[in-house]
Amino acid sequence: MRLRNKPWAEDYIHNHSHIVELNPYERKGQWQELFDHQQPLALEIGTGKGRFIDGMARQHPEMNFIGIERDKNVIVSAIDKLNDPDVHNAQLIHENAKDLRDMFGENEVDYLYLNFSDPWPKTRHEKRRLTYYTFLEQYQNVLKDDGVIIMKTDNRQLFEYSLVSFSQFGMTLQEVTLDLHANDDGTNIMTEYEEKFSEKGQVIYRCKASFTNNTNLK
Image (cartoon, rainbow, N blue to C red; front, side, top):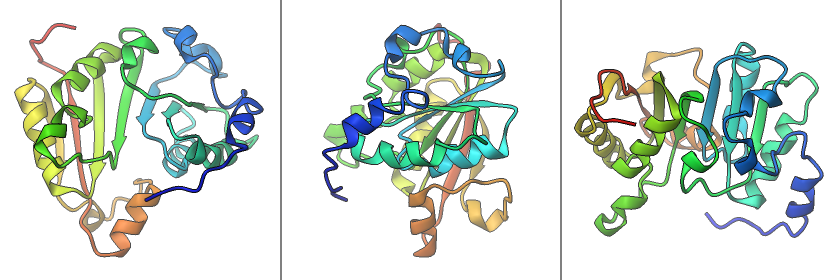
C-alpha cells in the first residue's frame, strides 16, 4: 500500500523528542534511563501506526516498550497515540533497523515482537525476511538469555518458514498457534493489519520462541 507523503513529518518527529529518541545509536545499553521505572523491556520491529505498542503499553504498565518504524509518514500516527500523559512506558525510534546491535546492548531486551512483517515471498529476497538467520543472530545478541520472540502474521508461507528457521537455529518453540482468534485470547492486542486481515476472514498465526538451550554463541 502506497502511503501519502507528509512533508511535515520530519519536523513533527523532531518536535516530539519526548516520544521519539532522536539519537538511538548513542542510547545503546542505556534505554532504561528513558523510563520512569526500570522494568522488562519489549521491542517491536515495524511499529506502523502504533496501535499495538500503544495498546500493550496501556495493558502492561509493568513493562517498558520501544517501537522501531522507518517510515516517517507512518510513525507520526504512532506519535499521536503515545502522546498521552497516561502513557509513561513507551518510546519510539525512527530508523531502519538494519542491525539492532548498533542500537541495543547485549542482553538489554526481554521481549521482541515481529508483527505482520513483510513476507518477501521470492526466494532471492530470503535474506530480507526478519526471521532469516542473520536477523536471528542479532536478536540473540540483544535479548536476554531467557528472552522471547513473539511473531504474528497472516502469511502461512512466512510462518512455516519462520518455524523452520527458528528450529534450525536451535531455538525452542514455546507456542505455535494456527488460528489465534479462534482461541478467544482476550489479552491479544491487534495491529491495524491484523484487524483488516481478520475482518476478511484470514487466519492469524502466532508463535513464541526463545534461545533457551541454544548452543549458538552470542
